[in-house]
Image (cartoon, rainbow, N blue to C red; front, side):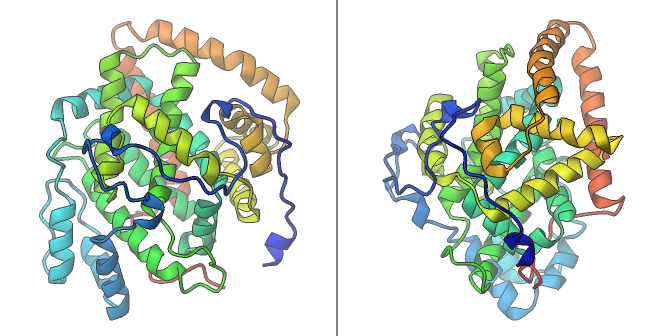
Length: 403
């Protein structure tokens, strides 16, 4: 743990930045669950606090796989299971097959029209969504103590390039044009991720470094969820990106379906943006703050981002400034992201102008298609860089972070 001991934790002095609209305050406050299930997709619910709810279906499956030693074989069999419409391979244990067949079903409330509209929205706004979900969401996740510690002490924490690559696989699948079409892979990646979450729940409790009880509760997943679509939509509104009501609802819908496939109960999935914002305001503030692990992970993530550009002497300060711009000074302080006054001033001036210029071009013929080609090239480059050109898939882990 010498790496941790060398790190100091920078606690912000109560300054709220661009992320202050979320009401982020002191971390680790015990806040009663008061979000009404009437605002959920289900329209009603048990009222059970999601902090004490996990995944009744996936947890016993991953636990049985780990205890039986069958994880490597199941990972091998699922390696080539890649498409939403693809039959499962033969040879899977019956209980695994039964779980996946149930878990891969879209909910009855899934709306194909909205899913298709969300794909078109992703095509025209991909540059914002990749930036917000990738860089912004990444920096926010490292400022969530439970998530930072879970990542650091699980197997993925020892190889962050591989960890980020596998996380990106799911994120890019959600934003793909064919995300929920038969030839897409969002269902596959979500179900695999659900099994990974269940395995990490089981494994982390055996780690001598883990003291947080059972990890990755329903609330923990909701907290992460709000650092993606809710945060992204708020930021785009703040940047004055024109978004129609239909596009806004479609973007929310693709993430509602994804939450369901990740095992979140329908009674916790917000039905509207108003409900999502209200839930975000309740669950994010008490779950955010600084940790030594979060500081280390932030440094690794920004280092990876900087290495994707050159020269390094320019790219790392630029990445620092961009991250600070996206999450604001309080979260940047928690993450110990260095100040870059010159670059920060430039980004604060240039980015709004770029957004305004780009949005002026969006209505022109072929612009969304051209933008998508560029965004897709960036996505492919990022994955190629992170994986070093190796084929990478989401796999169920069998160990925690190696000592």
